[in-house]
Image 1 (cartoon, rainbow, N blue to C red):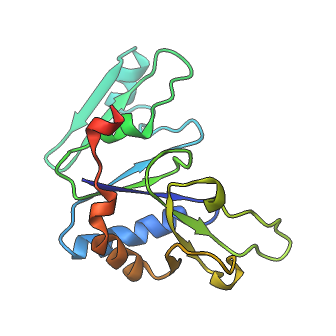
Image 2: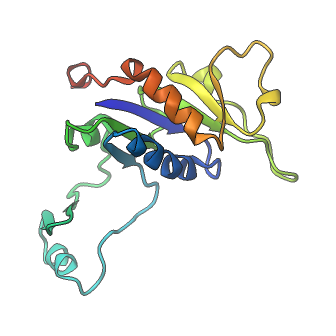
Length: 182
């Protein structure tokens, strides 16, 4: 399995890029999974549904499955429980070709930084790559604003075909070795 993370500030377009990259990779015959970090309390279940009622009754885990999908909902008994991205990757089907990771900016995974030119009235946000050795490229709408000595690959943030082609051409660079993260 190959793993690449997408890092950037809130509103930079990480979710949109990942959403648009999935079909690009799928068209090349790749199986794609996503790991997304949520910063807030979230729920994929809804009041009144059987699984919600089971959780409310105190179940530690609820697995719901049909002939089309499976979902696992696990309640953490101790607060706060912070799972590493590596623990989440271990939950995935190891036969997947690519895992696109969003929201684990502090991880040690290879990352493509998403950086956009600030809009008028927005405060500028610094590039992350100088402080993160795991950043292997940058997707931006402002390549001219990068430092003149910038040496990493640069992508147009809207050109997901080019990003997908680069990932596939450099797939060995993104090969995930489970034993090095256990």
